[in-house]
Image (tube, rainbow, N blue to C red):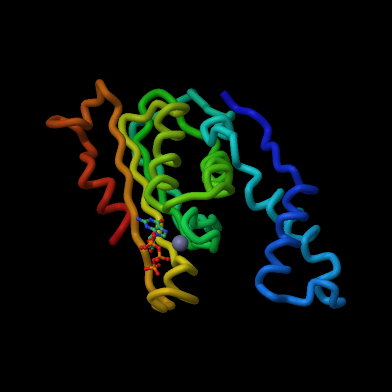
Amino acid sequence: MTSAPRINRAAVAVAVGTVLKYIDEDSGREGLWNTPERVAEMYGEIFAGVGRDPADEIDAVFSDNVTQDPVMVRDIPFFSMCEHHLLPFFGHAHLVYVPDRHIAGISKIARALDTASRRLQVQERLTAQLADAVLSRVEPLAVACRLEAEHMCMSMRGVHKPGHRVVTTAVRLATNSSANGSGSAVAPRDLLDMLGH
Ligand SMILES: Nc1nc2c(ncn2[C@@H]2O[C@H](COP(=O)(O)OP(=O)(O)OP(=O)(O)O)[C@@H](O)[C@H]2O)c(=O)[nH]1
Ligand SMILES: [Zn+2]
């Protein structure tokens, strides 16, 4: 069940003001006058997916003349926030699925990615949530997705490795899918090959 995000912007602004104070900033200086409110406004945007089901974004599903040929969407940009450090990780998502009786409105896959991204995440869970959203709403024979991202918590602090790439994959098969074994035109390995390495 989906519920609207309940971000208390006024309380967030107070909390940000407290952080500014305790990092020893002069929170009275001009550049910081409206920073707590700006951050609260920004959190309203970048955490807009909290409490929402990414699958609900896949609300255009078509059933006419569907063939069981793979559909792939590549290089969808995303931005999310690492739940350990509250720093961004960002990159691109690639997804391929083998339709059974339905195909998805293609933009809806990007919308599901946005909803799952706009919350505190780890990349593995974000990858799984995108695959699960397509599995539940499109009911494909199989779906695989791959995310490639740079984590600012590994780049600008800590281990300091800018330019790294974290690659995560999720593969889901219909429970009664013929892709789950012999006789299928497209095996899970084929899907992963299509996503590239
Ligand atoms: N698996 C996974 N780990 C992540 C992700 N984002 C951040 N992390 C890791 O979460 C870990 C948190 O480790 P901690 O030792 O608690 O935190 P830390 O002392 O700040 O660790 P360092 O980043 O190594 O300085 C780090 O290894 C991060 O790289 C993610 O999306 N997936
Ligand atoms: Zn992190």
